[in-house]
Figure 1 (cartoon, rainbow, N blue to C red):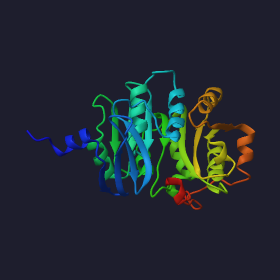
Figure 2 (cartoon, one colour):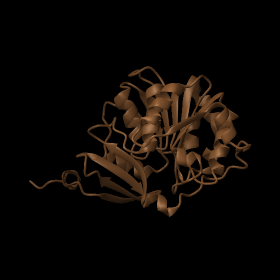
Figure 3 (cartoon, helix red, strand yellow):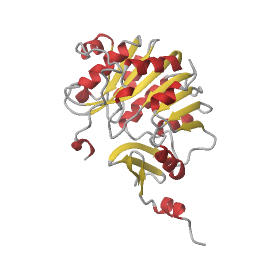
Length: 288
């Protein structure tokens, strides 16, 4: 009996290429892991997922968010999480693997991408992950007040975070959906002169009592374009453990907080819906 096309793809580890709403999606097999794949959109890496080991995080920015997920509650305790931006659902899978019985909502605007990922990289049927195809801010508005222990924002369109997800009004929605003591974490991308990143820190500081920023020191010094992970809450953050974990990563990162993080903003003003712009596009050299 001949094998189906889907089975042939998986056993032969061929790339899967398909047009989605956001551009051309590519699922590229990982040569070092039998059932692991990288997701690219228009050539820009978006996610990496290992179906045999969903607790494995390959991308450095995802490992840093993984540290936040690990520390948001005692080890193994189920949480209620909202993921704005789905990609290959890597972080939702990670949460399900490390915190069984967690209840999660994923909001991903690209319905065709969701279909591709569900078909080619199926979710564990036992994972409590609900995926909704909607704009991130519209989907967040449907989350009940105080429902989430954790909200993760990792939303990019054409490698840029949409403007309406960068404002104080957006963070008002985040705060509404978080339970008291809940944690918000966001993947931010910027390069010199770091205008976007400074504005995002100032905006978060206007809405949350406690902040931290995890990033490569070269990014923080404005030496190169890269990712920085914002962590925010109204209760004290586990700064010592975040710092230890970030420093011990294969690509070590620094954790900024307190007065140095305030100084980093350089007097930037909080962003509002009226002043918001999308995050800067990365230079082509970032993906080479």
